[in-house]
Length: 306
Image (cartoon, rainbow, N blue to C red; front, side):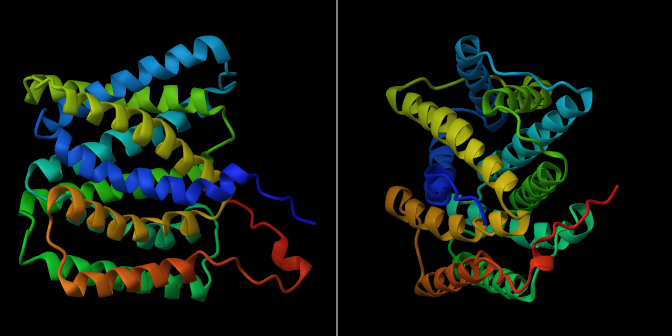
């Protein structure tokens, strides 16, 4: 008899979807007040201060093995330095918030391709069908918006590198991740992200910020909503479920982010984009449906490659 999932885990996909999608729009607003890498370094520093204060009261256990420290640092570097760093540079180069989210929605395809080899996780034909529908839906939205805000070559390249970063982080977390205390995981992960970006920010940018009340709200959202809650939920869902199923949520973050950008930033939404969103949502539904349990042998976990 399978264990019943806790309520927070059942609600995690919807909470993550809202917070992660809104992060693209809020980050785009924040880039009008700061340079991309400087904004991220400030964001990660504030996260470390927040999590450090929490750690003083919670006193979470630290990883016992050096390898565990390394795995948490690798995931943090890939997720924070590579993924966020490249995405912020892409948006600074002119890529719209919705378009950046749409490019990043290709993450499930990369994860599905890598999962059988990296985490010995089988991907069913229904999941492949859902992933392909989601890919087609994302492509429809991207093409329909290309006449309005075509990304520059630099912006597109940065977005593609950001995509590779989050796909690699997802696979690494699924392959090597353990159930570490979330405060510990955040401290190590964001510490790695902070140290990974700091040299580039110091060398390439001025570290000047246009301080205002609105910029303060941007930081609150990015630090608490995006960095602490959303990323924590993402890593928890990766540990609790199949990597390819969890990552397919990114097919929904794209249309949700595009709608948010339309409402808050005035980014146009062509009619064809709505069709693509519906197609992507259908793909997510198919890809994330639980597998049918036909016999006891199907419940046996596959051994991980060594």
